[in-house]
Image 1 (spheres, rainbow, N blue to C red):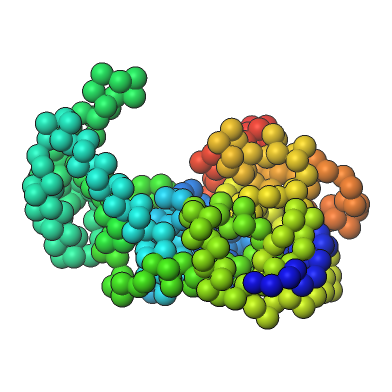
Image 2 (spheres, helix red, strand yellow):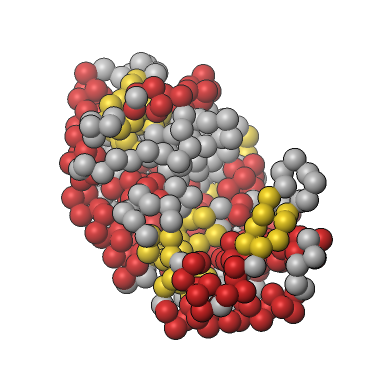
Length: 394
């Protein structure tokens, strides 16, 4: 990839983040599809994160809920599916094949083998039986359009079969075939999450047959996915890329070479940008503030985060598993956290006062009002609670 081309400092990295992640005022998006395309992937483990991440980036967030639901469940321009690091994300639908080939195939083979092994050790039916149940369940799902696991079991009663997992171990449990099989089918790209049973904050989903997609070459798919992400989040180090994708370092390096990525100098060492993205990027014309949700793709986007999040704030803003809670941003860096109280009020706290004066506080307060304006009376509690969020939301 040649010699390092130039140094990209913290100020420019924050400027790139502001513009490419649709956070600075003039860069805000018109709709959820535009947000998802700009970020490549929205964390979907916590259902509310998708809507809150979209709303924070829309020029007019008043219709965040109906427009995001339209994209997910009516037009199907966005799809919720397993992706990198065996995590559920929301992707633009055109990336379905790329995500499946680049990250899903390897994980899927491992998940299916584990299911068959666990069933065999429990004396449950074999792989042939499982394939019959799978084919029957997929046919039933195609007929219904969308269905819960319980509804599918009405059409295919064998989905209710139970087996004991890890008998005699501390983590012994009883699994139903439907729970494990639908998870495997999701990783394999055969089914995706459908419309939730409750509101937009509900974590109980129906299932739907995955959109049809071609089978791509895994190496080419990895190059395509990494190129999309690096265009949105570059510069990034190999460590960032390996963490975000969940790939082996050899796969990351192969993909970097395939897209002709350019090396640049960062405070952390050598970083990478896509070809043609070496030129300086100017800061936004106006200062900006943002309230981003737990697991937001910007806050979770890089493994090495010191350039936008001071290390001393991490214990307050992350849970013990490394999941970020709701964050307050000012001009490209995290300065605090926020929460929603039971009466719906959005409250926030500044943890890093450097450069945060009256202008910043006024802008943050305006963002809090903007957020409450479209969330309304809906109560949003992050799936992964963090110290500041729990304290503020009490």
